[in-house]
Image (tube, rainbow, N blue to C red):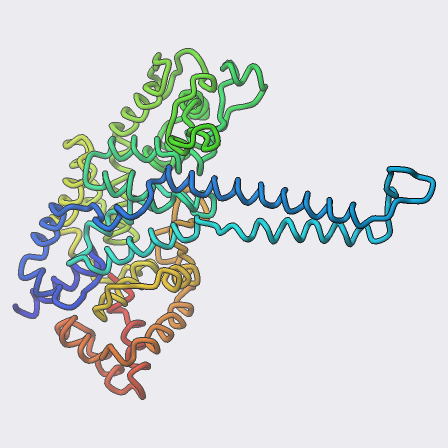
Length: 489
């Protein structure tokens, strides 16, 4: 393989994949574009996921644990109060009636509350272990991938249609598997319908209790409409900002989406946590969204609007821009964006074809590897270079949080940003992580082997020189991991 072919293979692995790992440059061969496209034909399902609960099952498991925790706390508090009453002397001349405020009352109250807390804490929280199992499966899939282009697409779409584990920890990983991973290489409309109808998204964007003013529930309870879900779908998930929709469109769409909720786990132990359409919450009658009237009376009304949003020209441009920005450059070439948007429109949102259009374009390869990787990509790339394929999810997610990109925990519905300005201030924290990782793997990873065998010497001369002059293997590894060859794509 020529030097230029090796350099293009390295660029393919960094820009579109998860970074070089042992043997990956040879696997890419002399046709990196073809290798990237070929990877999209391989299954995206995670075979080990059969051991993990569905999102609804995970939700029920946590809800059941919370119910047991509450029940045990009440039992412990009641038992403590009975013991206190039995030990409290009856005041003279006050037959059958305890003193109103016996001495030590506040201490006894505190003791009852402490007993309740201890009883509740004795019931383990299953949400955290589920989250860590999902994180481990996802991370190890990225480490084991030959190139990682398909995994990067899953990560991209998961961030585009983000939810937050801070609000719905039990479902966050399963949501990505069920709604995103299953549709990341299919049609955009199918992906859109899957994510917007997923209970995790409905929970995250506050749609569970949204009700129309003229719905049965709205009239009886005088509750209100929540516009969050509709607004974020239009602004973030489909059309993009300033694309012609109005506040009236948001309100109408929010009314369309009333009734999209989930089955309460306490009401149905078999199907709790699953999507359901509740007609008692739904605003009756037709609604006008973007100039079109939708007359359906059930969940199909919302699905009809989503289908039209998926087919809107503004959605094609919005999606193409975000994809090109994520993979290629903070300011992607306009010609590349237009080519990808055209492919989106021509194929009715075939996401695999849009991805192929991107990597087939010369515009996607011309720029130097100057785009700063997000923390998650950098960490995975660093670990991949060592050949490690098994991770401790507690340590891994802790490192992600330290770097400001906690897994499935973005601070807002727009997800994590993809521009350098948002991440450049965190380079110092990356050095801490690189040093810590280098210290732990010093005995199993040789920086010279990584340079020569993993990167086939496609590393900047000044980096090779710095690594060669390092005072220790740990320092050499840290210098290598912090180099532009690892940090940029």
